[in-house]
Image 1 (cartoon, one colour):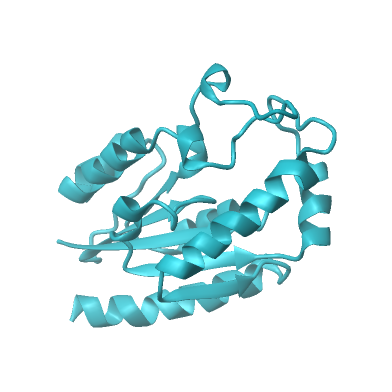
Image 2 (cartoon, rainbow, N blue to C red):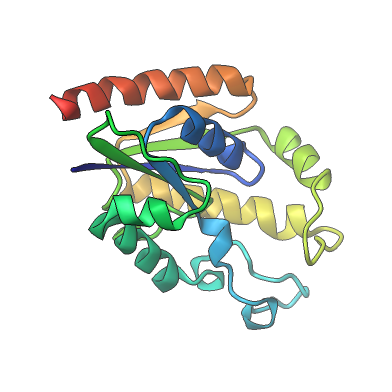
Length: 197
């Protein structure tokens, strides 16, 4: 049984979840672990002097729990998939793939070392702000949160990532989701064909 771990990172509202779900649909024996599922309770997330919750940091996430989940998949991908109600195991494939998606997956070195392939979705400031404003968050973004915290933290986290991580494929998140999927799927298929030999 062979294992392949794909990282899909990027800016908030850049299309990470959409690409991950679409890839999961076409990639046999795959499942998704999303970093957004591991946020700490709101009461545990610190607030800065302006009253902005510091969600865009690793300290706002339960990374130990996320790593434990990934470790469970690594130990037995087949049983891990069977424990997920929506997973379907294809008999003809010898490779099990894990799609890990999130906005800070490449900034956490214990996780970053696990990836066999890394993709990063980027979109311009204007598009990101527009998409973010159309989403409903719980708790909701306070006035000025995007410009005062979200975007500056994205730029900071991205600089740190680029200083420490290599082999990232940067994707244009403004492209149609079908175009993005085709590009990434073709890339991964070539790798999987090599692995399965």
